Length: 109
Image (cartoon, rainbow, N blue to C red; front, side):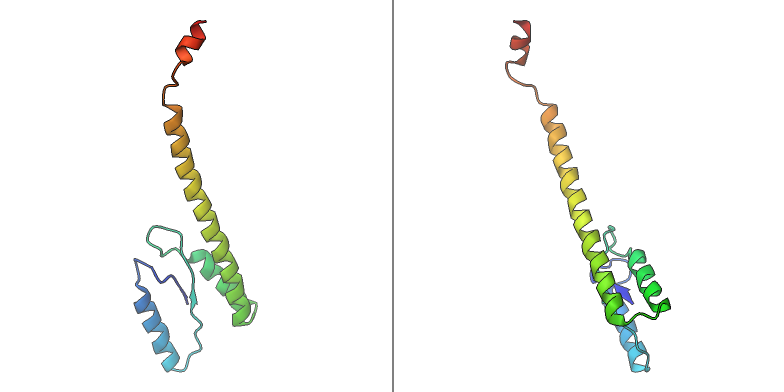
């Protein structure tokens, strides 16, 4: 089970409760926590695909968890970088629209 604790579509408490019930029924269900990068914090598809691939390849849970943690770190870093770039771009665009004092006078000389 791949869960974002801040999921706005399916609350983490509901997901954790589901995993707990499965475990009480005797199922071995690892639950991996990630930080989804969409607005609803529900988009865990890439993480789930990685987990399923690891299961199909019969990889140990620890190896799958490590791969998902690496992907999660990369996605979060990428998202933070994009947010900074968007903010910087807006600042640059705003500055570019500001008139420069003395520029018209210098151009006339």
